[in-house]
Length: 81
Image (cartoon, rainbow, N blue to C red; front, top):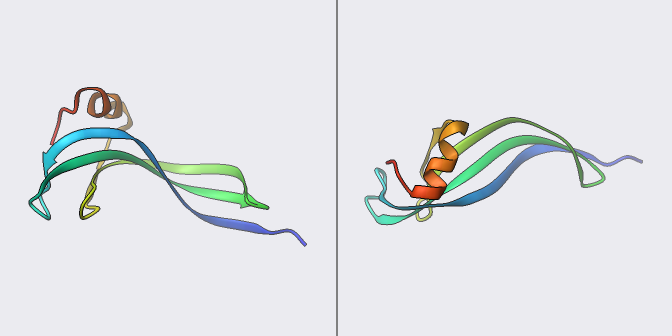
């Protein structure tokens, strides 16, 4: 018997600073998240694809996609939004 799985993987890459959320209107910390598809065999990750990066509100989980090249700018300086 082989146990395999396909699903989504979420990883927090870092904090991006405090911004006003356009959805919940709170001034709160945002974080940069990497969301990808994954394939596991016996709970061991074998492959990852379709990586996307989001700047997300920590209160309401609203997020919008950012480019991979912009990630370090958000994490280091907290600039944007």
